[in-house]
Length: 153
Image (tube, rainbow, N blue to C red):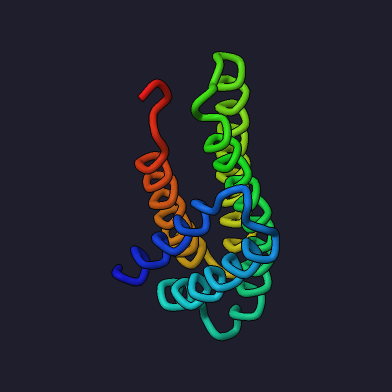
């Protein structure tokens, strides 16, 4: 479990990147995070040797889509940081709607890949995938919400 906490912490550092950061830095940090995360998933998700290739192909597809959503999460956090001190009702509402939409897309992606993995492996492997991904995602969300300041403070 310590690995999970360290991994979540590493992603939070990625999420804290400010607007002056460039795309290459974000890509590098996501790459390092992705390698560590993959090793952790391999430790927690027990796939039958006959199903490993299919599982890891789907996992890699999932990670590609997840990284795109992660980049959007970083952009939204940068927007919030840049406009925090001058938030209006309109900008707060627009930002929140984008965050909620991103959360829905992230959750839908996880459900989609749970179903795909279940088809090529079995429900237990799919559940293991869902649990570890859900745990990491929840940790990231909790950490971000705990770190960003409340408006008006």
